[in-house]
Image 1 (cartoon, protein in one colour):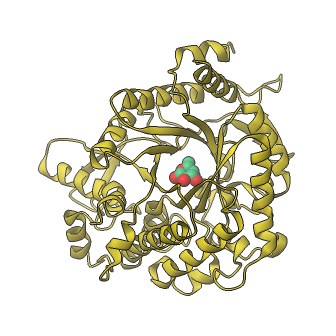
Image 2 (cartoon, helix red, strand yellow):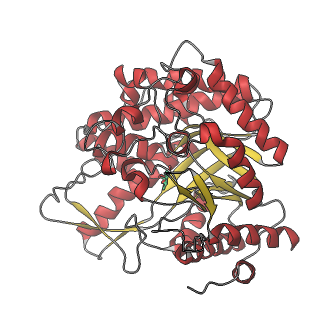
Amino acid sequence: MTTTQPRAVAEAAPTFPPGFSFGAATAAYQIEGAVDADGRGPSIWDTFSHTPGRTHEGDTGDVACDHYRRYPEDIALMADLGLDAYRFSVAWPRVMPSGAGRVEQRGLDFYRRLVDGLLDTGITPWLTLYHWDLPQALEDRGGWADRDTALRFADYAAVVHSALGDRVPHWSTLNEPMCSALLGYMAGQHAPGRRDPVAAARAVHHLLLGHGLATRELRAAGADSVGITLNFTPMSAASASPADVDAARRLDGQQNRMFLLPVVTGEYPADVVADLAEAGAPLPVEDGDLDVVATPVDWLGVNYYFRSVVSALPEPTGKATPFIGAERIDDVAPPGPTTTMGWAVTPEAFTDLLLWLRGIAPTLPMVITENGSAWADAPGADGRVEDPERVDYLVRHLAAVAAAMEQGADVRGYFAWSLMDNFEWARGYAQRFGLVHVDYATQRRTPKHSAAVYRDIARRSREA
Ligand code: FCB
């Protein structure tokens, strides 16, 4: 196979203003492995992945990329990639094995070693407190459907900040509460695997309440760069029929606006509140909650992968849906190529999304906390991993970000998802999102062609 030289591709890519951060992202359960090490407690993802039939081929995060032990090698990889920044998550059950009460110092020590290694290498840590691995003990008490979990999350935030606040500059509360609440409690496709609209709506609100309470704890402890990461999927109607248009409104409401608006305006969108109430799954808002949810943040983390086209059907689709009251709504993939996840490649919608966000929160800086694509990558006979589709996706999505910035969107950085191939949740190890290939049998890491392209795009921007 012939491939373009990284530098040639990088030269075709946009440049970014001085200070723009180029990073890569991971999440604890997807890479760490070592699930029994140093007093870690079980999380809902341990339980879920060990339940037959829940994940692709029964894959679990037991070993994953063994990053818990190999983190020095992984930091060296990041340095070779020329990363400015690294976004990772802390596993709550490593730090508080039963979610509340006793703190496990050995868990905190691991993250301290990781952070110190990053700082020594000149890589800025961006810490996410919650990337889906709720301590199982809290799920046993109701999980995110229980209001108390929000309070426990704020306690945990304070514990992590007291250990790492002197060395981690950037703090994110939650990663993608939409997935935690709606994939976890409504569709049952993610841990804890429940299919209960009432619990799902409760989880939505308690996650956002937890975000607000944790933000207050972090601020009180002196943090001055606090954000939340939301995942956005632009929704459009398959036709101009009123039913399709309403289907797009409903899904856009639950996917995008239900999480964004309370955080930035202090109100849930009225149409979504009505949809959920009508479905018998109201948001359990108590007096004063929305003031807490809207505690000011310093930046918005934006995760973007693809856009969706939706249509209304006369009969229920029979498929599990993460959206409440959406049994008769189907997803029609937009035309064009899809990744191995089955996701469309739609960079133009990324520009529009960033401009829409700017319109809603004009003064809030944005950081692209995830963007990337999965392909069937494999090393060639020479051991190299060529991934032309990922290179194409990366360059086109960076160009989409640059186009939004030219039109006024305030975007401060971009984190590729992901640093390395990892445990892709219910899809297991079959989906490879990494800039770095991982051979799971040997734990050998091999930077893909896209890693070299990304390094050169970043270098060229710094030199511009
Ligand atoms: C996002 C998750 C991340 C990864 C990517 C592909 O929804 O935040 O952990 O699974 O999708």
